[in-house]
Image (cartoon, rainbow, N blue to C red; front, side, top):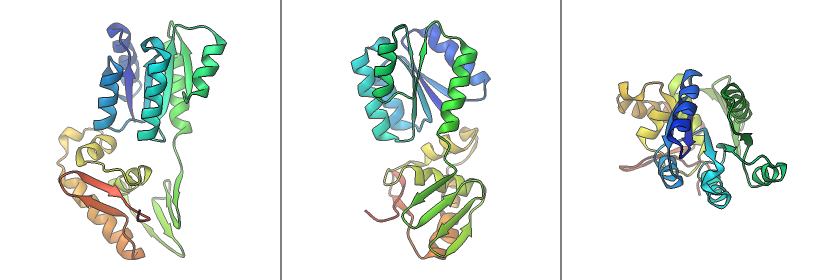
Length: 222
């Protein structure tokens, strides 16, 4: 699970990242909304923590951008504003949670855990194709097949973002604990497994190679 912390106060940003890392999450720091959008363009995040000090209008624009890019992403706002009215407004505008300052880091981690747990789907269903996470099983009409390990994780990750081009680097970063220690050809091996164990079995096309850019989940065809 990777988390982006968007906080202009460097000390607070560092403390949040430290708490997340100590809890087993991978996290990155951004100090401006512009930088946060750049991070979302190059990496896949499960959750973003962003401070309302950037201005509610700017934060709401960012929430829309993030949710349009990754519909399953979770957004937690941190704020100095103590009013219930502002909290309600933020939740209505797409935030998944709202935490007031000064931050209790144990509470923050608990809220992060809850948000990510709520976002973990046990299955993905796209038309006649069903992907069952816990069983590493794929069902298509009256047939079923199994895809194991990292190949299944690659398949499920691509299926979460249909028709979006995802690079090898993004896949490595999202799925492998230490992507810098893995060669990109493991992605090619995983894609080949998907085509042999899923596409060939069901006689459908699920993954399209986009030359020099990466891969995208293309079932059903646009």
